[in-house]
Length: 190
Image 1 (tube, rainbow, N blue to C red):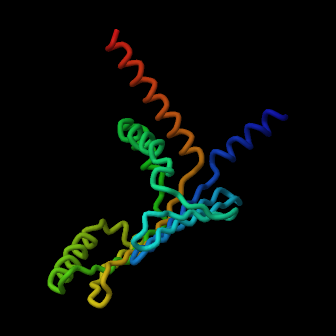
Image 2: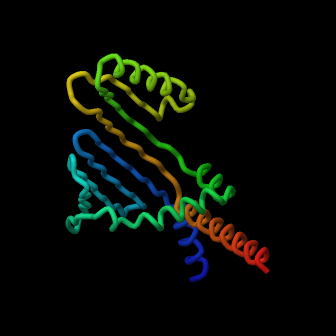
Image 3: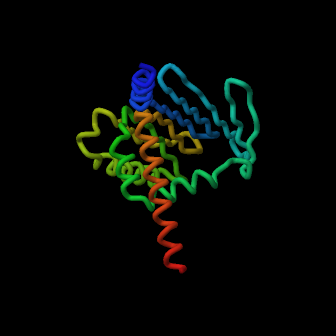
């Protein structure tokens, strides 16, 4: 009976929805908020970079800290992205199972002169108009010219949804691809 209960709980865990919401505001400074929802559990991170500053402030529920550019663990993230790029099956599996719930973005474009602002705005609107029609209900992107402020701005919100089992299966596929690649390089060296 205990095994059946454990099997049901494991199945429920694998089917658990993960919802990731990212909000970005960039203009004179940058502010990003990342929210992670895993069932009834949620976490929020706020990243702020003041204008003309190299400091990045990370605020969580338990307090704030200053991140130096060298203190951000980017190396591990790049390793995962490179492995995901090399492993075709894992990448296709992950992209197939990520569901875009919503993408709202507004870009205000400012350049040094009005003609260039109008041309860049028109070109970006043309690119946005080429998005597939099946995305029109979930993706809204507005591109506007900005003639009064001295900088361009971006405001965006993206919400994606996936299951916990998708992440676990992708991790197993990445591990398998890594082990196969390592085995192949060892056999080539020998």
